Image (cartoon, rainbow, N blue to C red; front, side, top):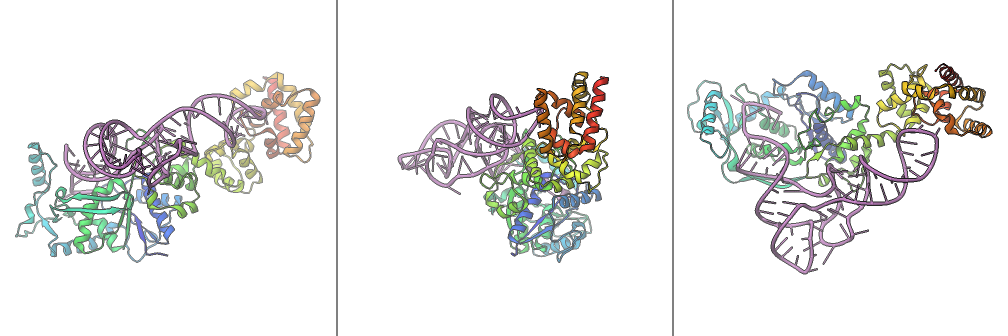
Amino acid sequence: MSDVRVRFAPSPTGYLHIGGARTALFNWLWARKVGGKFILRIEDTDRGRNTAESVQAIFDSMKWLGLDWDEGPGIGGPNGPYFQTERLALYHAHAEQLIASGHAYRCFCTKEELGAARAAHEATGAKHSFRYPGTCSRRTAQPDLPYVVRFRAPTSGTTGWDDLVKGRIDVPNDAQQDFILLRNDGVPLYNFGAVVDDVTMNINLVARGDDHVVNTPPQILIYEALGYPVPSLAHLPMILAPNGEKLSKRHAAVSALEYAELGYLPDAVLNYLARLGWSHGDQEIFSRAELIEHFGWDHCGHTAGKYDAKKFLYVQTEHLRALDDATLAEHALPFLEKRGLVVAADEPRLAAAVGTVKARAATFVDVADMVDFYFREPPVFDPKAKEKFLVPANAARLEALATLVEGTAPFDHATLEAKITAWLAAEGLQIKDIAQAARVALTGRAQSPGLFEVMQVLGEERTVARLRRGHELAQGA
RNA sequence: GGCCCCAUCGUCUAGUGGUUAGGACAUCGGCCUCUCACGCCGAGUACAGCAGUUCAAAUCUGCUUGGGGUCACCA
């Protein structure tokens, strides 16, 4: 156990992006590694863009990935509520505290006035971007008008911190401006809401995306003005598209949940995401437990990583192969149902069937596709395969093969192979001479697992029936 | 443009002053083989550039170039 408290604070404006999922993962890994607490908080103050469906998508994604939270929505905790819109009184109280201490002030400038000032500033072709001139910072009258609360930011000196992944970062304060803490409707802006929440939730390590480093100085200023210690900070490089652009749906499946549909394993997704931006020597494949065991901020990279679909698929493949047949069957079952196959969960042939395609499949979608013929009667015939191999020239051999294997006992790979091999030798034939025709008759396709294992899983009855059916099709071709 | 961050094979990276610069994915050969895969063997490919520090630099310093982030009453 440790007193480490980390959090993941997504904004529910859509699906859970894999970049966000990685941020959540790193926080979660650290909490699990050191025995700390992982808190989930929903930053829903942007009422215009937030939706209930998005909130649900976050929960579903986190659950699918297996990133369980110790405090947060649905679980509660001593520092709730965990939705920012339910914590408005807290922000108000902290804003009042800052006004009282002189660190902040009420600003009555309207958006229109500011807009005009901004336009005027830009018209001068100035060197730096527009900054609030501090008009209300010096005003004494407090009219009964709508106002925002602004932070009185320093204009000299520097604000910095020792970033856990990037090292020392110092930013001159002259780049600061009197930024807004609370909008005129009482809702906090990101920097203020995040700090008040992190403070009141006792978060002592904040790990987030690279894009937040510019938010850090103002946040540190707020911590100091409030009189609270600044938490440890870690900024993780972002995930970019292969071409270096910001990663979006145009480049890849960016929603964490999409990988569930694509037939990926949550552990594989976590493995890939972790390795993108973090490393542990030359190791590429990690189980969830290994990730927890080896994770650390010191081995997080400093460079933005590019999404690589091929590498991702490779990692998924490795995880899929590590599954035992029964577990693989369990995972693949929903995907069989998705393609209209009715297979009982306790169907004994299912595990054996998936076992024969394990080395050939990358995802559960692949498994379902490759195992389809075992459970569909008749199997779906690939037109080209049928046209090429179920021809009159092969008809007699298919019938002979059917007759040969009929009655074989035990009806298993080894016995079948021995029997067929002997027959082939006696006939002066090679396995090549019958393989493809038999394969198409048995599976409907030109590619499949080995013939003998297919026969074993199919069982005597289906094997013989399909070979005879193949014989008929070949004759009629 | 200002501020900040970053820079090793195509990609993810190992590397923390002295290495034949390692691994993985991808690519290209070959082997295996009843098909497709798997597996095995092998190959090519990288320290952005320029100065400097040092006996010695991918590792330290500076500059240049390149890339990224951010400049809201969004998060």
